Length: 134
Image (cartoon, rainbow, N blue to C red; front, side, top):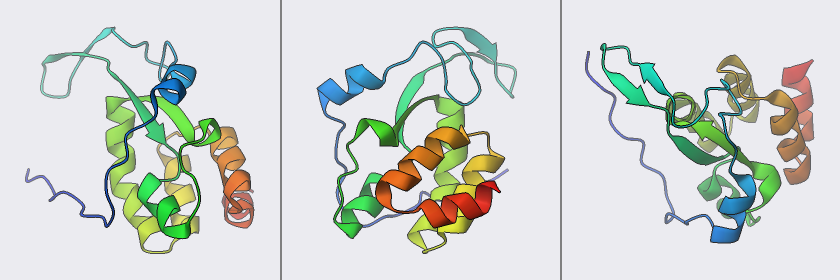
């Protein structure tokens, strides 16, 4: 199976500030609840170590384009690399202007919708989030 090409987005990568990273770390994935550091069997039969990623619910580059600060605790989730990888293709929806589709996609892959809703309210996307949740 051929992997899709990497999604190209405008803007520069902005690292997470250290103090915010420390506040957002958790012992397990906030989506699938796998504990970080545990060993799991991968799809190809390999043994993988569950790794933590600090993920912005609403992408940094998208929010910076709107002129708002993405580096706030309410917008950051502690997720495993697998859950983070499932989210990346869904991000193309919000960059295309489809907030409904983006939030619906997060719901479909198991992102905690109460956290998504909090971030949506914070950024003024509450109508899109409410429509998708109900």
